[in-house]
Amino acid sequence: MAIYAIGDVQGCFDELLALLDKVRFDQRYDQLWFAGDLVNRGAKSLEVLRFVKGLGDSAITVLGNHDLHLLAVVQGRRSPLAKDRMEAVLSAPDRDELCDWLRQQPLMHRDESLGYVMLHAGLLPQWSLDEAMMRAAEVEQVLRSGDSAEFINQMYGNEPAQWSAQLSGWGRLRFITNCFTRLRFCDEQGRLELNEKGAPGNQPEGYRPWFELRDHQCDHQQILFGHWSTLKMRLPGNVHALDTGCVWGGRLSALRIDGEPQWTDVMCRTICDPNGETALQGE
Image (cartoon, rainbow, N blue to C red):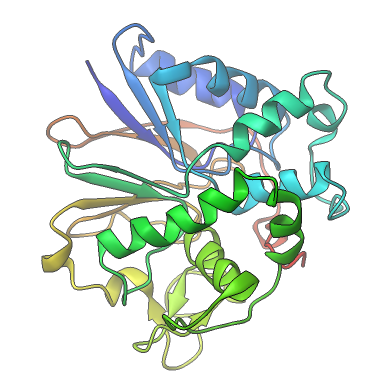
């Protein structure tokens, strides 16, 4: 059995199939972990959703900001953006079935036997892994409930910008969602900087990549994440950046995690504008 963690697919279905062919993926024995953003800027989001859903227990996926954006558009809470490419999903006869499946996916996945956790964007430095799992569960519970439509309406925005255990209501859930699906930079007090999307070095003074502020010796597990295509680096230590910019003309990457980590990737044919990334505030 082989287990592969795969970065942001974003509708690049042909490249996903090429990557799986390259690693000789066998659904009967192997498992895929997807780091979120299955959909949007590539040409075949519908095919990706149907394929990953059809894998059943052979696939695990966490939610990314583009996945949540799709849910908001389907529910009429947001209009499609100019650079979205989700028309096929929106008009598909199985649209509601696919979106119901998407709503059931977690924000964070943890496998203690393997020693890995996976999320889409970032982990707040002030949260332990146990705390992060509890915070993710708060959002997952609402997203899977009858309150999901109102949650999706309320999740947009950059405030509150700093964590407090006293946060409550929609503001608390919005902050948690922003961490798991949008975070790149924060400061030592855990204040989020959600506007800068570039590589480290472009952020405002006082802010650093979230993974530089975590006490990795206390995590005791490997952290997998996507979302940050401009990072363009293999990170030292126990953090692994999976998004290698496929939809922007980069590569689609898979990291084998059931043993000594091994990278495999394929070139992508799609080239989009990286400055047009969908963010939850609808910019």
